[in-house]
Length: 144
Image 1 (tube, rainbow, N blue to C red):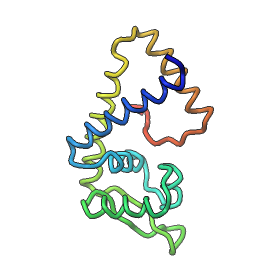
Image 2: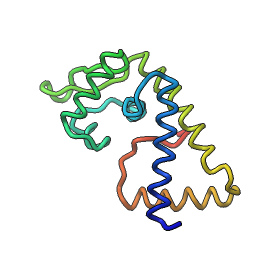
Image 3: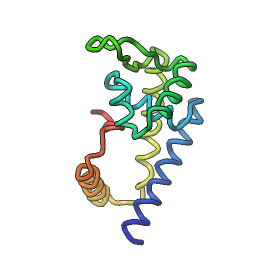
């Protein structure tokens, strides 16, 4: 299998894990991504759209739906009175932590057929691809 097919097909695997984990927690995969991105800190709408790669209207809808579920809230940006930051609620933080742990556990099983050295090599190569393409940190390293 070539690199293109391998990367595309592996993205389907990861997306399937997000879908499975999100169903377990009663959220959509997109809401799961949003919650994971917000785990370390609140974001303004502009930077959140850039991190998630979403247009303003798509992001607004995602935040609105997630806020209606009580998982995030908008609060004034202390540095810009015209702007808001998106913050996890207590319930959102609880679900984010559990969703993150379960998603990490499931993703870690994907390369279970590899030897430890092969897993390290896979991580190193994929890490280089991610860094070379300046992918924003949308999912932190487990335990970090």
